[in-house]
Length: 264
Length: 152
Ligand SMILES: Cc1cc2nc3c(=O)[nH]c(=O)nc-3n(C[C@H](O)[C@H](O)[C@H](O)COP(=O)(O)OP(=O)(O)OC[C@H]3O[C@@H](n4cnc5c(N)ncnc54)[C@H](O)[C@@H]3O)c2cc1C
Ligand code: FES
Ligand code: FES
Image (cartoon, rainbow over all chains, first blue to last red; front, side, top):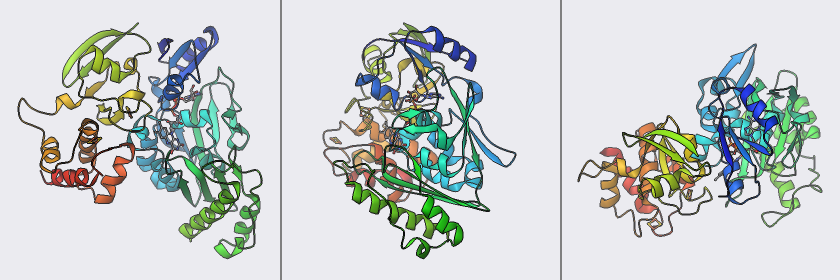
């Protein structure tokens, strides 16, 4: 690997000041996206700022009827947390479906959200669960946070501190894995709240999106037959060697149906 | 250069590493602990799995600087003198390896699984090995070895 300068920090303030003083810095959390990217030289930062030792970013708690997850919580922390399982078990199920056990021991929710891979799993949960992303500068609604492929609303000197989730009555995540990479060819998260239903899709397009027509139909009547006549517009879906856009369109519908049957 | 202090297989090491050193290169090249292998170098194959503070991780996707103050266990830490660890024995008993390249990672991973789940089903064992690739055995005997190790 080519050379960079490594910094370990203990506080967000330290990280923020290094981010503004270094030439071309990059934050390191679990490293399970960044280190492979460095090896391939897709990213060549001058300085790596390791935030994994910042203490107060790795807790999970329930506050004012919201679930708070610190940015440094690993996928394994999320999937095994009693607080997550008892409030949003769809989220715990989602975390369990990321990568493999060793990836889940290192990769963090903050890193995944910051990276905004179009095939990553968490974005579907954040959008369906009306999440708010807290950073060192500001707060963002999940829907406004994910802008496009690998593109989010945060700036390069901004650090994600944690994610705040609304707690639904029930929720489910269904994922169709790419057989080679394990990433989502499509993933559907359905969250059922008191007065509405949210349905968010990852993997199918360049960025996570909601299926509003499906949401409305399910809010009227929550069963599979109420979405029978809805056709998924797949004209903008990803079309690649793994699957055509039409195939992904059908996949999304099937996953929506599977998630519904999970919840009734 | 970054200074690191770490415990590896119960021994304390203090060393200086280049900032861009991967954990697996530190183990193999600086410390001569060559039991940990590099198969893919792209986080896919699991040949490089070691335990970091009690969890199995891929050492090809961790910087050496990141293990400062932490505890590591590598394949060299399992056998006691000439006495193989029960999981190593069950791999031997079940012919769970051919070329052996993937074996250190699979043994470390099996140990992590059995530390966390005393009685995994065949499905749970197979699911746990999602991040491992063995080009030789076809996995069947590896699963048998883990099942035998449950009883040991
Ligand atoms: C073999 C393998 C399989 C995988 N499978 C899946 C899968 O099925 N589904 C899935 O969703 N993901 C998958 N991943 C990706 C994995 O979930 C990563 O862990 C995750 O995307 C990034 O988290 P990290 O903590 O490792 O981040 P890092 O690699 O440390 O950082 C990623 C990016 O985010 C930035 N960043 C990190 N933390 C913050 C923060 N707090 N604030 C601001 N910026 C930050 C970094 O600067 C960097 O640009 C897989 C990875 C591997 C290696
Ligand atoms: S060498 Fe680390 S996963 Fe293959
Ligand atoms: S025994 Fe040869 S790769 Fe597994």
